[in-house]
Image (tube, rainbow, N blue to C red; front, side, top):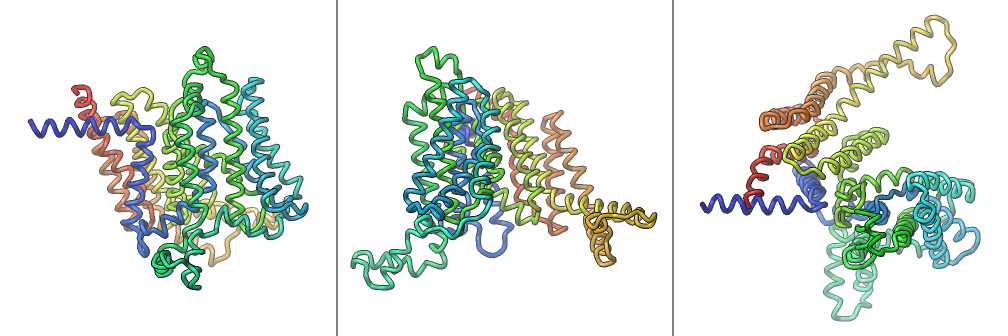
Length: 506
């Protein structure tokens, strides 16, 4: 009886946990972080300086994602945030460098730009009834083009040091310098000594961007959870017509959501300038996709009315972990874009399935996560194998054209491999073909398993995941941390029916 009672309490606790919109993102962050810690050599992943670096690198994108959350909660979308960020960064640098604006006035100018753009978007969507997708898609082009035209797509000179306070400035520097110069008050000297002694090991990567990032999410979370603005945004996203009938000024609050979103994009531009040496209009390209991905990964529904600021924060961190993992796997930018698109599709699919919340659907979601982990883990060897095969095919085709006397452009002639390059490509094929093909077959089998979710399927998928881990380890390829996430998802699928049954009984 005690065992049954304990099991029931555990089932209820687990069920309550997974009711949270951010539950999946938190679990994924923990699993990936622990897995990376276990497989990474050198400085531990959980070392404070490494964690601070991750937060610093996440800061500007995180601020944009926070504003995007409000728009998506209203069942809207803003595809222009990357362009707003780039234009604001370019124009702030332009007026500060060439028009002689003092830094503070240039900063105020940038924030005003964000506010104005948000008013335009919000008015067109809320008051004129234009689809948010069309309005902000147009904005994506308009604001990027405006930034390029205004500045000639040229970088500004080095910006004033005031902008460093939004990014690279270390707020512990005065404490350390004061201790070294002996100008600190006596009661602060021990603290200054401690900071100085641990500067290189711990505090060198502590920056204002990290402080702003954390404070921003704390403040935004309090606003969304404890103010009328937050409550009304959730209500509008859940049922716009019902909200209007309840007396909520739907137009006003939708406009506010777009204003906040564009202003956070403008503020993110200032944070980016705080870490970049100069301003340029091409900053923030594709950041709209990154921001949307972070929001949906964090559990916010693209259909509106459900989600959380905490989930978005975790989504940003998870996205950065995945990006770092792909970089460590030496995948080029194009593959990373492919992976990002697949993550968005997976997150939206999970959101659709979660609305039904039946055991079968939940198991399908968990199997999909496991299959996706196989796909992500196998990208490195598969991409090497496919790229090498394409190079060989192109070499043979172009060589055949040359032998027939066809005149080729210089770029086309480069497809012909010299003997040394040919040896390199052939060695890649011989080293990766077995692993690449086997991992690809495993991935296809993983997605095929979604049609028949069950205990036997989950056990079989667990075996496939372990086998994939062995293949990756023997080949020296990264990817085991991602497989760990899939393994945990499969464990969850094995106990889904039991947990649902216990939850129903209590």
